[in-house]
Amino acid sequence: MRTRLTTAVAVLLLLLAGCTSSPRTGGPITLRFQSLAWQNESVAANKELVKEWNATHRDVKVEYVQGSWDSVHDQLLTSFEGGEAPDIIHDASDDLADFAYGGYLADLTGLLSARLRSGIPQRSWQAATFGNGIYGVPFLQEPRVLIANATWLRKAGVRIPTPGHPWTWAEFRRITERLSGDGRYGVAWPLKEPVSATLNLSLSEGGRLFRRGTDGKVTVRFGAADQVVPRTIHDQVDVDRSAPGSTLGSGGSDTLPGFFAGKYAMVPLGFSYRQQIVQQAPRGFDWEVLPAPAGADGLAQGVSPQTLSVAADCPHKKEAAEFIDFLLRPANMVRLALGDWMLPTCTRALAYRALHTAKYGWATGTALAEHLSPAPAQTVRGYPEWKDKVATPALQEYYSGAIGLGELRHRLERDGNLVLARYQR
Image (cartoon, rainbow, N blue to C red):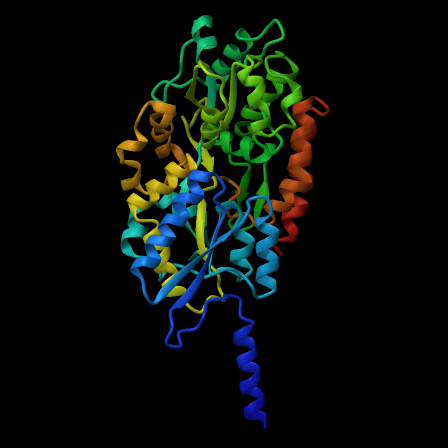
């Protein structure tokens, strides 16, 4: 009786297991691939690659599942805890830490091909490495750039920055002040989500914010290098009046109508926003892509690459890793990058001619790839709570002029370290 009961329980647990892959019982394995692609070109590229895989792999089929960036964290958490997670998971590296440490994702260290491991720079792998394991394959990355009204800048006679000779943060501030007046602004900062933009751009000045001690614990220290970028933004809004306060609570897309209408000379945006600009800009509107300002560490910038992971409960991890390897062959990675208007992480993929054309600023973006490194918060447990409860409201109040730099530092450090401490006991 006990043997029959144990067997029944084992069968029930198998049916409720986290991956919904069908077991190999003479028929093909089916792996569920949840993609967060949302732009039409990107969705099409992903679906085409799934179709190509299925056409050439009789024993392992992949089912495309559409996910959403807006709800992916909560959706994954619910699916992990309910035993219904997809087999292959598309996410971003800054969302992986809690899932990796929580045991929800498979360690891919022994599952990845030598080609894939060597083709992506080590700095990119660091974004998905937690402890001694690799819990995602970083494959797309997006630098923040300046989208500029080319006509306005030429008429003003300002020096146009290039990746080889960028503006400094001080020069950027002077130029935006020079471009402002008569109800128009040199720059508009869309900072509805101010934390990642502030931290990632601060790497150019050597800012790190999170310090890991010899005991492995992380604390927040808002030092001089961390203050350069937020002070620049604050002063453009509250001192120079070269940036409007009205856009601080806006998303990037919200600033485009004003940009097209000539209210702002420049908008700092993610590289992929170029697609929206191509689609929405008025006929004859002349725009260009400029590198973000540089600091003591040059054009260094933090990014949170998009990643592909495998669920820990997936019974067919080897096959899931093989599909990821197929999806991220250099030529395929270029297709995904072009579809998402982003940059691939793979060195060979970055060399493809399509990514070096001057059209739509592809060459400028590709030139920034070597300066990209993992965002400072990548491996910090408790970062989502710190971001939502401490850093976001504090930065929003500082940029709006409601609090000063001293209070900003006090809140980021005091309140922030209280939050992080709970995750590091």
